[in-house]
Length: 276
Image 1: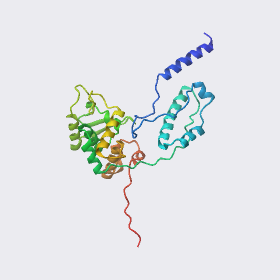
Image 2: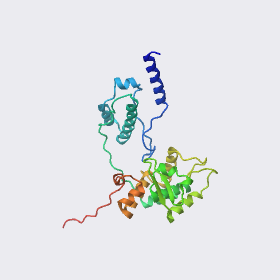
Image 3: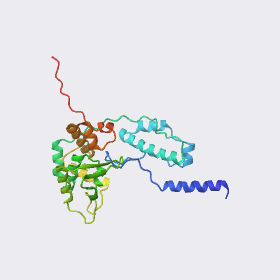
Image 4: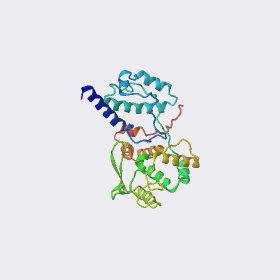
């Protein structure tokens, strides 16, 4: 077989294999946001097109400037950057144009639920969602980690959780409050044979979109606006910081660095005495 035919055959096989593998941004979907990240609208391109007409950093910057939803634009470019990293590895292009393009400035979210809002949510929630809310307020799990808890994760030492985002494994020791919530959750009616602590009527794990719909309907019944499920995790980490300091807050958040924990902390009000 001539050399050019072998190269064409190998490239076609390589291209089919890569197309069979879906591209996804790193980390679990839906964490800390209510809507999935979408890629910017780009023309269909082949590996040869990326080599001949590679996107430039100026194109990325222009997209960020023109995007009406500035924060969403940052997430889209971050996802596109992951795609280009894969393309470099596959030999489709040589540079990642998303690197070096300054992102839109973001304000750190400081929304915390009030005691009145938490009480209203618990009243409006179903028994299962009430258990989920109580559990996240105790141990501050992310939504994805909460929904994938299985009955075998309830060990004699405590609740074992493998964090999807980092792969870290944490064991939350049993306390009276934690056992009470878990016992309540286990007593809920469930389909025979399901292994999930929180499951749908069919016994399956909740999909992110399905759970988000339940959450939004509950907030509407409770009369609470502007609150995400991730804000409950922020509330738990702030409570841990007040009770046991930054190290305890980092342990509750299962963070690998203090910087990640500090990003969740909401500064309190400063009482200032006026000058005389």
